[in-house]
Length: 229
Length: 161
Image (cartoon, rainbow over all chains, first blue to last red; front, side, top):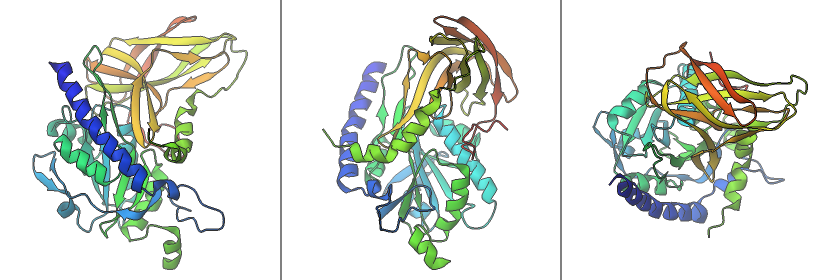
């Protein structure tokens, strides 16, 4: 019974993975941003993360927040610096470390631009990432972080829209525990409602401190940075 | 099926960073295998916690970590996290090689022991014994300490403050 459930879920998500990967390879400009070509200005010089050009628009989806309330993504994040991360609460290693890094960066920024982004953690492991568990999990890290859940097709739609890889739910071990592959990137939406930069999940605290205030002020690339300064 | 090379290229520095934990830091002459800096992040969920340590094989003989046991968890499994193709992945490892004269560091984003079914709450400052079972060195028991969840700070080390 349990096995069947997980196999079904794996197939479902696996079907989405092919779609997501196709989109990633077909349309995504991530590869181009990672390295500077000789003789051209590198839009990533002095930045952490990678420029997304053209930028991501926001997925038109409604999640459920960890208080059980609907969270229409576009409306709730309108005009606000917003950070979106897809993970799972049964992840003991990287997720807490990355979220904690971000929390400590926000402490360091303290006030002013970049200090109060909307931080959204979408639990892709819908069987275990219940609103209650997400609240407990995020509450241990930062009270301001918001946990979101949704039915798998809704999550898959959001992930496909953002050209990320779809989650993979692995088979449970003999104790019933299982691992989940999830997108490693954190997308930051600027106040213009566009995602101009995607950050690797293991970004350093000092890099968040450097980049979030600029992003909140509408700056997202080096040449533009120069114009402003 | 799909070409992934360019995506992987972008991620290569990250992957290298994360799997570069088993650096050979030869200190020939200590003559023994030691386990140091055993820590557990205070769990954000009481269901699981990540145990990490440094294995310093100061002997001239290759060894292998085969398993880890502790009373505080119903199960403990060696896992390795990685970033690959834009995805964060985690998989179980049957064993971990500890070459002669090398240090193997379990660090965030790489190797860790996943403790599951915790038998008691773990708070910062708590200590408990963990036993590492090696193919040659046998069992090595050390005291692990519960620390605040880490952060990726400038020195790239786990912030245990």
